[in-house]
Amino acid sequence: MKWFIAGIWLASILFAHYRGRVRLPLARQFLDHSVLLAPINAFMILCSRVPTTPFVAPAALPELQKLQDNWEVIRDEALDMQRLRHIKAAEKHDDIGFNSFFKYGWKRFYLKWYDARHPSAEEFCPRTVALLKTIPTVKAAMFAELPPGGKLNKHRDPFSGSLRYHLGLATPNDDRCFIAVDGESYSWRDGEGTVFDETYVHEAYNHSEANRIILFCDIERPLKWRWAEAFNRWFGKVVMSAAASPNDSGDKTGAINKLTHAHWKLDQKRKAFKQWNRTVYKITKVVLIALVILAFFLI
Image (tube, rainbow, N blue to C red; front, top):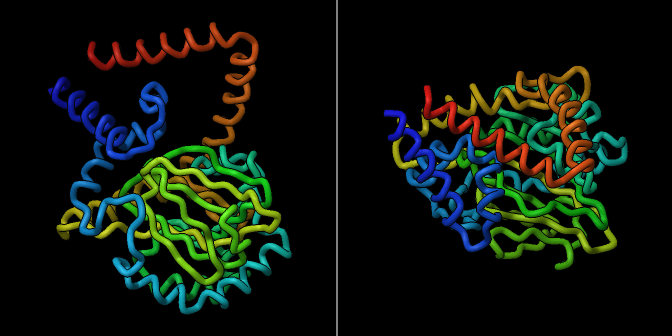
């Protein structure tokens, strides 16, 4: 049985790696956080009721039209958040999903995260929150800012049970500010939306002189069968909600992110070890991974 499970897991990792034209180095793929959910991700993609291409036509998710029709209302609240400096990096290193992005200038203000409440969003952005509540398939939402010179290096997100929606709010309207998903580029424009599969390798850059603010949403992926959709919702409620991160002290912090600060401290020691001797660091990393794999097969 354990060999069957190991085989399914390996096949799922390779499926994720080879499904796109743009790939992470194979060694990095096996160390990527998406490995943890590889079998679930493969299941979601194979059950998808919408195309599994890097970009998906927004018309495939017609409920999003309500957000686009009200983009100016959403924009005004986003600009208020920017003026008040509420769109910001996590202050306590308690945002496991996006911690690595903050060093490149990316910032966020959460409006919704699965079943976790954000009273700060309800207070400061009541109209946007009210709109989001009318669209149950929106599982997570935030304002995301990418300043001039900001970037997100190549990465893939860990969970394929959702699709990513970007709605331009206050953008440079410039092709130098763009996202590339599996090698296909899209430049944000005010009032325009795009949908893409965040489990493809993607990257983003703002080479313009203007700031970029968008509405960033995770939309429940439509699946072929109701039981599969029920599983997707259950998984999001139990697992993804645990990754909730606060805007301020009054918001909920998920169980995973309660551990993230301790992880951050350990990571600082890891980086110091790597800086001390990269060769010894790499050898140690390989040995630890080999020991984990060996322990799995000895159980």
